[in-house]
Amino acid sequence: MSVKKARGQGRADKMVFVSGAGAYNKYLEAEHLGRCKMRPFFLAILLLQVPSPDPSPVASPVTSPVTSKDQRVEYVISQLAQNGFTRQEAESFFQDPRLKPYPPREVAPRTIDWDQVIAQLVRSASVQQGREFLSQHGATLQVAETESGVPREVLVGIFRMESNFGKNAGNYVVFNVFYSFLVDSEQERRWRWAADNLVSLINFCKATGSDCYQFRGSYAGAMGPAQFLPRSVELYGKDGNGDTVVNPFVMEDAIFSTAHFLVEHGWHQDHHAALGKYYGSANGYPRAILAYAEALRLKQPDSASTPRVLKMN
Image (cartoon, rainbow, N blue to C red; front, side, top):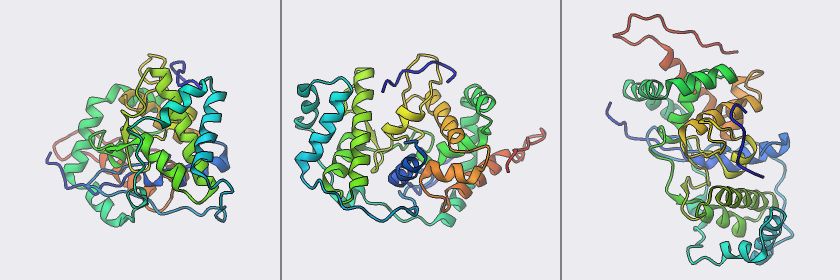
């Protein structure tokens, strides 16, 4: 699937970094809805620094009949063949000396204290960072809001939570993260999720002429300031700067893609549910994003302007 799409389609607080741990849960929900942390996307809340969401209810675990690591890699190679790769090209990704699986404990979900996260998130210094981001990317946020109907303050809240506006997007080798899930997961659904993301990542690299091992992201494989999974980039990514390429590391594309993802997952019907799907769990995340959006909306102490009203259901 091509990643090219037509256009249109203060002091830093100590961070409670919540990374893209919701990415797997995000994928499971997406599969049920026919969509893709994400993400999840995946995610990396960056207020202060800690990663992971509470798992969403899913079907009973399915033990994979494909237990061989080689068989799983072969599955990815077969999927790449359907995307136009020669066998030699596909195999080369798994013969690279940089291929190194992470220990399972390094990519395991973390527990989050959402009350603590929200308390840090709405501190004045944190909110000021959001206002600065609003000012810096105001034009893009305005167009994204006009086209999608998602308030710019909500989008800013997501970027604050996921990566501290791109400053803390993760330092894990994304290819190795998904390879680790591919070979170590006991559940078939989980390793196939990893396989799908590997295929999408490799497709993205081919389309952009990039080295697949150069991309860094969260411990769950979420990438860029909005912490999108490679699969979500393919399915929900949207070009924001008019260059016809969807790149999750480009801020304009990340902003448009985030708004598009929310709309595709029911933003106009249920804000909380859409935000829950973005993260992969409705426990805490929607409440945190909306609290930050409300803090941004409130009139600044030194401002005489009237605060704008967010239209929330």
